[in-house]
Amino acid sequence: MMDSTSVEYQKNVPEFCIKAKFRYILTVNISGAVIGSVIMYFWLQLRTIRGFGTFLFLYALFLLYMIGDLIYWKHNGVHEVRLYDFFFEVIRGKKQKLISVNYADITDIHLNSKLNRLSLQILLEAKTVRIPGIYTYYPGKKIWITNDAFNEKEFRAMCDLLKEKYELYQVKA
Image (tube, rainbow, N blue to C red; front, side, top):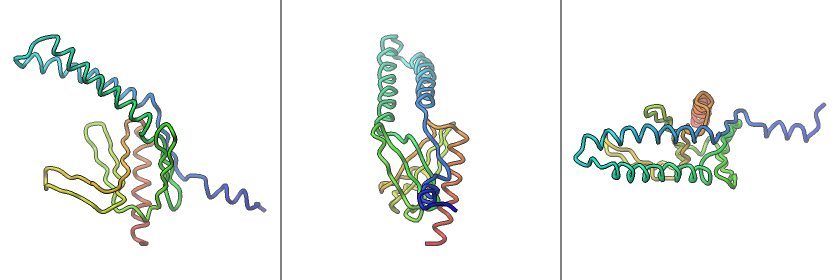
């Protein structure tokens, strides 16, 4: 027979857990820097601004942006997502800030795909600003997770399971 502590431990074991890896986001940013430099170089060759100094200046700005992105992710980005039976947890940033959300509190989920980047927006308030066919913005409380720092297959599996749980709890609510 199991004692109460082992039963309590069983309740706190996540059904699914995905952890970010710094090397994934570093690879994304280095790839972006290389591809960005090639595009910027050829764009400058086609324009009237042909100076190599202009290219170096713009590329330095681009690299600063990429470094800023890495620093921002390290301090504020999503580092781990844990899915449980009735809720999920998101761990953010260097200080490991824990955000816990019940599936019933989710108002909507949007999964967007652009090129190789997946972006998951978990809306916690039903606020939407739309310009039909042009732009959609969700100004309310939300959790935004991108696949930049995660394994692609694990991220897709997490998104599928989260959508499944969201739909399950929306029917019950």
